[in-house]
Length: 274
Length: 223
Image 1 (tube, rainbow over the protein chains, first blue to last red):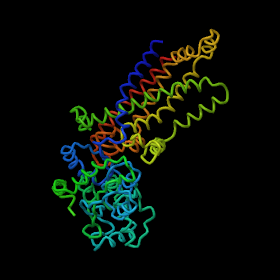
Image 2: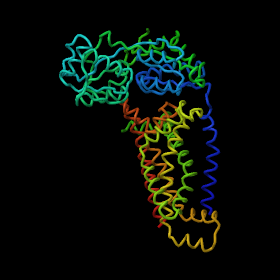
Image 3: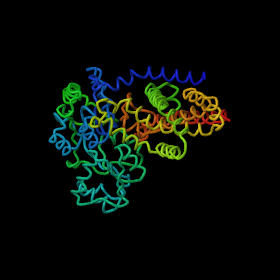
């Protein structure tokens, strides 16, 4: 009798103690909290960890970052589950705006995509002149290629390049990972394969991807611009409009721009201003 | 490996924050799961005949549903575009706890039910003979089966603390907010930062050992 009573008493007490935590979660819109859905590259490169504390300190907002891919980020925005998105796939962004899911879009920065591959470069990408030839060389050799396969901005760009190269990638050499950028870089290193990556993430994780190196870069077709979009309050009235506006102003204002330019990994600048 | 230990013993605030958060989420999910779990377990155990066998195997099947499937269902309800979106649970601690609650509850039901069935049938007959009130019967039975109930709670805790699917999908792996041990391990391994991943892995290992010892200890006690 005693034990069961005691257990029930403890459970009741815990419920009472837990209530405030849930009330907090249940508040329809916490005005000091901003949910940002973004690509894995901004998070995994460390840029957000570098910039957001400055913003939070200055404004008192708290930014919760959900790092997925561009496609997933925009979907989260469509469902009203975030206040703002920071993504990189212009065609998808334009479609998002056209459908009325975003209230405002601004250019933020760009970096570029690079082709990573084994140091000995079995498909001979070093000799190719543009991204189209580089991808055709990989397909021609049926060299292992690890694709994001997650409809992220990088994946969208990769599909574009395959299309331009006139290749429909399939077969055992083409591996759709369905994972974030740094996971895919790790996989390419482990499998001795090629992959398309954004430079910032590569700089952040290259020390843990032995044997992998940049085997192709510099084609203007591989530029990677980022845009920031506030979720439209006309579609989702609960979104944190002022928070999203403040964050957007920060990223595109003087202070944010200076931070973007000054962010370096191993001495190399990762993101450039548009 | 040495670095992994160092991270723990140096008291790295973020690492310990993640550990504390994981324990708290799973703790509350488990506590909440007792509320419907134990009464339902008793109800099923006491149900006569065929209905009972059906209900028991149904609950058993449910407790084997992959965590990502549970996460997906809960997601569709607590997304802003879902019926419970107004609660603001998605990408918040409440979302993770809710998802883990649905993982824990079937386990609590089925282990409680199994524990009650293992009781000597004469025990219940005795209660009936003495004409005990339903409430009296319930409390007496719970007391008799308390090791099984405790075991179910410990097992449920073990399941939710080690799961990734619900935590990732409903919590969003947000730093300092919903990042738990398992989602942090997945992220760190992806980033190639194996030290913290290892240190969190060690903590999970210790928890797993403690849980197993606890469950087998409870089993002995019963016998």
